[in-house]
Image (cartoon, rainbow, N blue to C red; front, side, top):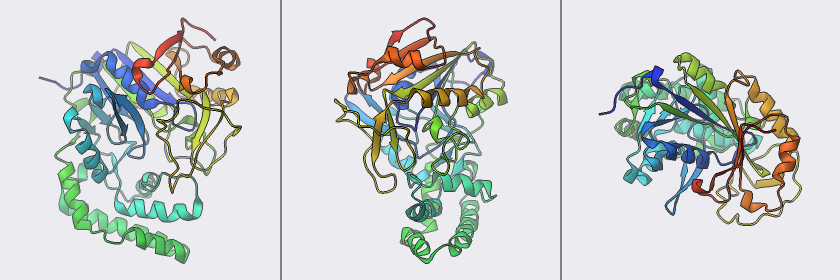
Length: 390
């Protein structure tokens, strides 16, 4: 029988941080880490929310994880901290595709819940702003909560409470939309055509059957290893990215270290896993330091495709100066160098001429280990160089 997390028994912490604009293989790395000790691990989602898309291949099956951690194929449960968002209809749809793995999902009581109003506002506004949003209401949800109009995970079991909060959310957006251009008002109304609060509330009640809402120290799971699964990338961080093309989230290790401090977790070892592809990518509008063509091979399984809200998936040569910038940004949030750090370079099979030695010579940070992968499967991840190198 599993028991509550015993905080002083946490021996190891792994943090997975993307150094770019996202899409550097966080799902693959989390799957790799979970595979090492699935019975004793817990995935912690500490930034972003339901907008993420982390691809994992497992026994010939591909899944893009949004609401569940990327260790789900290994039977590892997932915990959402209060800094994340949750969309009940999306969770139910994804869960249906993962039923055979019996996914376990814990939510902090104050996880922010996304509604169709958030999504409609996000999509209507994005048609004007074109900031590169995913169009699933993540930023709108966070902004609404910041404005004092919340809907929390702990509310979902109370239908009357949810209805009253939906009334307030509808009024909140109506006031905001009425101040915008007529075409944005039309787009907002169009997005909500056919939507009924009653149906959404029913879905919220159904979702409560498949989630466990509780504080981290009240979770019932016997673990001694935490795998913090980051979202997007440091270059999209709301403090360190390039406004307005940023996400409303802290995508560095900031939230993860705050979480450890909040619950006074004294892990024996903390490892920061810094991820980058061997080339630069960006899915959505916004600047890139290089959009020179790179000739890629073996990329027929690329999960990022052109879509209406994000637009094209762009690629360019890897920029070591930007990697150094991202590492400097993250250095603000942890007691460097008292943690172990690992560089993970993904998609090495897609750019055969990539020079790893040249990159390492240009980076200003020393790494305890460098790993790389040559396929979408985590089994292909391997150590390139070790021990501590620059």
